[in-house]
Amino acid sequence: MTTRGKKYIDVSAKVDAYKEYTVDEAMELVSQAHYAKFDETVDVAVNLGIDPRHANQQIRSAIVLPHGLGKKITVLVFAVDDKAAEAKDAGADYVGLDDMVEKISKENWLDFDVAIATPDVMAKVGRLGKVLGPRGLMPSPKVGTVTSDVANVVKESKAGRVEIRNDKSGVIHAPVGKVSFGKENLKENFLAFMSFLIKEKPTASKGVFLRKISVSATMGPGIGVSVPDIRNELKNMGIAA
Image 1 (cartoon, rainbow, N blue to C red):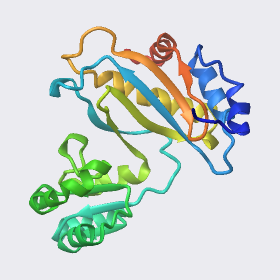
Image 2: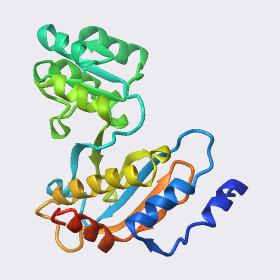
Image 3: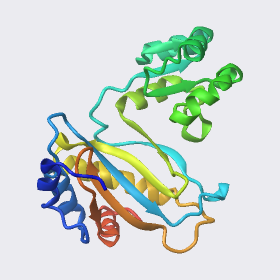
């Protein structure tokens, strides 16, 4: 049985584990229900009405949040010639091909948050699948990280581009900001994320799509969020939900 520390117990006392809060209440609580000395990340977990065993019900995409993620993103680009120059000009931290492939494969070097590749170099980058794949770092056309528009994707990644991908149990976990953002900015990021996710609903998914949603700070408890209130907030913003 896991033993919780006093600080966790203290912040958990602020949250009713059986209640689904309004968006405003949840964003207020998540800004308070934390205790670490560092600026904790705020994560959202969404239990979806999908069957991830079927390819046509899986979700994999990406979104740039209005207020970013509040952290420095390190970007690696696999490219050559003009595209390599474009990536450097756009602010990529590391750019290369053979040298980067060798560094990763031989040294297990993974000091980056996002990997981007142009289509013409994927034959070589594909060799890194066993290393990058399990860590969610493999470039993929599904989330736009295999692209000829490297400059734009580098800038989006630096701005806080969030990859959305369901796990084997049909749950999506994603960051939506930092506790220091405050209630309003967290709310805008959260609703932008939820609006995008609703639009990504697979046509093969039947029945209730959004089953259960919670938000939490890195070291804090989960806070349930009301799905009807999320839809009402989006409706008030003129967004179909």
